[in-house]
Image (cartoon, rainbow, N blue to C red; front, side):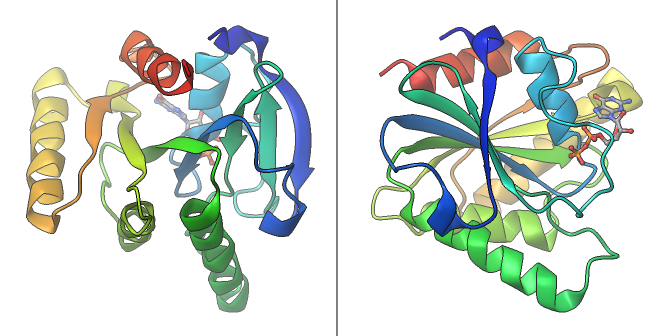
Length: 198
Ligand code: GDP
């Protein structure tokens, strides 16, 4: 797949208003500020495809980027932003759960977590929903902003998350990633290509 071909297609305010559930999708999810927009822009080699400087939590839309006629990348709303009213958080958790459980075209989930603050309760919810499908959804975790840590501490964090996932009985592949240093870019792109090469 040619990630650089990604083109904005549509913003859906709810799961019901998403494009028809046909073809193949990979979704990106993570806490607000985890570096999701930066990762999408880096992977697609476009500076502004996903807006990287929005007010976190405000634009609660599911954004679809088409790679070709039948393949899309999906930018799910960032979760966990402190200033969003509780009721709205609950509402959006419902949407995310619904999308992750029901979307047939979904091939895999890229879950982004700041390497310094991994596996928040929200992240665990996402992992749980991904596993609740009849055929569990493949999950690949990007530990973002890896450039903020030296190699040693970054590897320690990677190993710790791996251990915790095992303890929690979650199946997921995992890697370090940085939109700034481009660490892990090829590995992440290969994962997308693998999921979308159908
Ligand atoms: P989003 O809310 O998950 O879409 O996060 P953004 O992509 O908007 O990034 C949030 C903040 O983290 C911004 O200030 C980015 O410049 C910064 N950021 C994102 N990725 C990286 C990274 O790999 N390294 C560093 N040092 N900062 C990053």
